Length: 610
Ligand code: F6R
Image 1 (tube, rainbow, N blue to C red):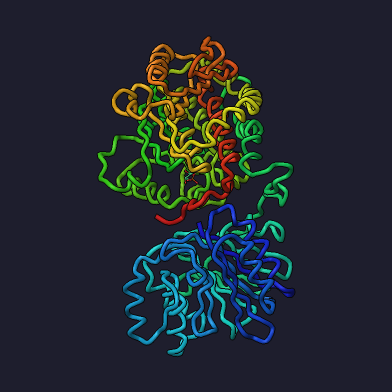
Image 2 (tube, rainbow, N blue to C red):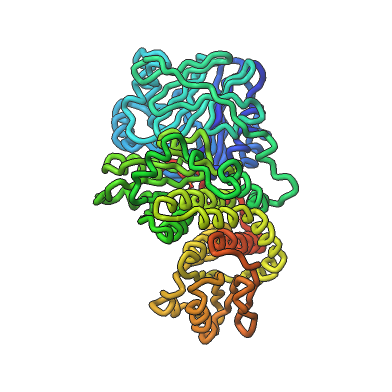
């Protein structure tokens, strides 16, 4: 979603803003822009639809835009298409410029009122009402800060804002409600950004703003207050991110890099959480034992890929005797709940800023769910700060919009969770020790699965002219089929649907003909016999099957059936291993199709609006 960066420096801020925008690209955007207070005290703004290169071209073609105070933005269109006019910053009266991440829910009402008051609008965005509100209040005598407060007081919705006033160079005001915003503190430089990755070339020291905070920054000072002007105390944090951790290295795409980092990411997520025989429960937090002891049921909430991880966890938890429900966060929000007693809400989110997931956790609390656990990859995120218990996944920064290593580490974290909950339902020491041993082998097993890449590359060629694909899985591998289909559609734009294989003849079999590739995962488990039957149903109708099969299944290639053997693994980790070939397939199909793999069209990395 939209990315914000702002900077005040004793030197020119243009390079800082451009570098920050590049580092925010991963969030997803379709236009960008910046506004800088020039030395002579005038406000200059440049914007461009499309990728950042277009903004850079616009800058090169301009008379130059330099100064010591500026704000910049990558916009992911919500209200109005990604045109230059709709790109941020929005300006009012040539003096006030504003960038926003979020949605102003009452923008129509405010716009009508502002038009009646004589204000002009030049875009279709909801954001422009904010900058016009600020100017109106200033025209009526309010100072800059008071005008911001008065304007924010009138807004409904979620937002993060960065605002400059050409009459006050050296000052940026920021505000946060709902959407993430941080302040970076450097040497004689202060910054505002959506996340620390935007600033990592300049500082690691930052302050996370809380909902309701208004921040006033200059080159050496940060003042945080609430809407009524009361001072707010926020801790300074130091990021462990290194500028190199977000570099591409020798890889063609971040997605490729991140797929290949999964062995290490799994190992990092296990590190310090297991002994030779046990999962260390303390890794969930000091309150974990008390809360887990009284937990009788689990409600998992998540979106997209994280939801698929939740679906896998349901099989693991219920297999160990723990009742578990999994729901897409936005759907959970859309209905009333009959709340089970002593039910722990588990929120899964790579970014920890997905608004639907955050809102669903808040709603669960309102409904009376007992406690919450966050499984998250972003330590300073809203989700982590708002949850009672936290288990961090240690995937490292994930830049590719399509989630890969974050998904695998969520599964690792959920495996740890299933084991500690399983103890309460009778999992004994010997069984736990076996499961932990299998987990220890996971990083090496992931590395072996990655060796399938050249075989998968060859298979991907068959998708060069395909528009549709079906994915099949049974039992715990049905969510893995869902994830494989999601990866393929996200990055290659091939329409891919996943079905539980048993559902095939209840409808989707009608789609199968010699043009339809059907991808299946076939681990050597109790479902194998039935899955083989489903494979034959597809073959009999001329469908082209691609089956990733455990080498112990003895499935072999024949007409209309290509089998790629995946080294045999224990069933406890099989879903993680079978994810890898499906990620590689999606990646290589997208490579052949020539799509923008790391930044697929219309998608954002962190979905901070509903
Ligand atoms: C797909 C993908 C998305 C996210 C979803 C939730 O590859 O990445 O489906 O999984 O937007 O995001 P988080 O996990 O950050 O809450």
